[in-house]
Length: 367
Image 1 (tube, rainbow, N blue to C red):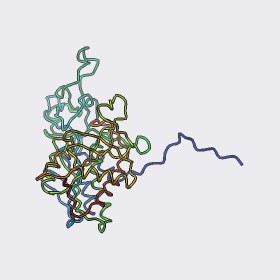
Image 2: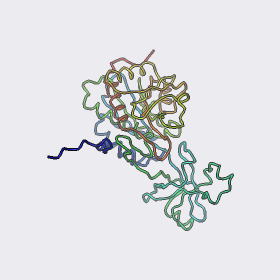
Image 3: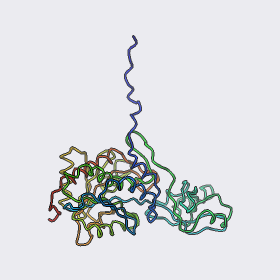
């Protein structure tokens, strides 16, 4: 009998199960102010588990579990993403645009984009003058927004305006793919993973209501990328005692990243727990204790200012909210190809479930 060969060390890993909820959020196109597709995904997956479910005029989705509970815990993850908005069409049918959110202009040209229109998606390509047609000085410059356009193959302004309208929004075309193992790539992990986490936490807690003292309110917030606007109104409406924002954070484990400036965090190292003036000490201590008790890998970051997340707005809601921040490590933020380890996403869900179940009546984060 022939001896069996040992498995190759380079053999492909078993396929990672990608939650349908997360996959659908990543496929949804939802630039700030046009979050319709992501709202529909959150509605479909979270509303059935909620005791109360609401929307508001900014486009937030507000799901409540255990409405008579105390304390009131708000979990926030934003469903909006970067985008482009059509602002002008020239006589030859080329579309000019403004940016929604903070773009690296180097990344914009030469990309396929999907324009969301009243008649359905329209494919386009972002263009600029080719490198062959530039002089030496121009080749060293980062193109200005007005020096780029979207080409939809139209022959005239009239033809273009029959297909798109001023104010239509566009997103980069690339969707989600697994890169290797549990590491995935997508255009909008920022912050579809955060919205997924807060929705998934509520779904899992729904089966453990009897263990839950707190009222848990999971909010998919709108318009974070243009100023944490949805979180501002959600914090006022919910009026929570405690809150945790879930966003992405920079994984600093790649070349050309000075950890002396940005700290040490890595993909696959677990959720990043923030510490600083934006963070309530009670929330920080309880998140760390919950992670340690459950054996959940975790990392730390220090931020001496208001963070660039929904936590900034929530902390200042009404008379103040005891706020924490969990970040999912991510490489290449605000590009069409962001990298996240799905294991870190699952660990963040597990940590927040443990944190919520550990809260006791009257724990309001005062210190």
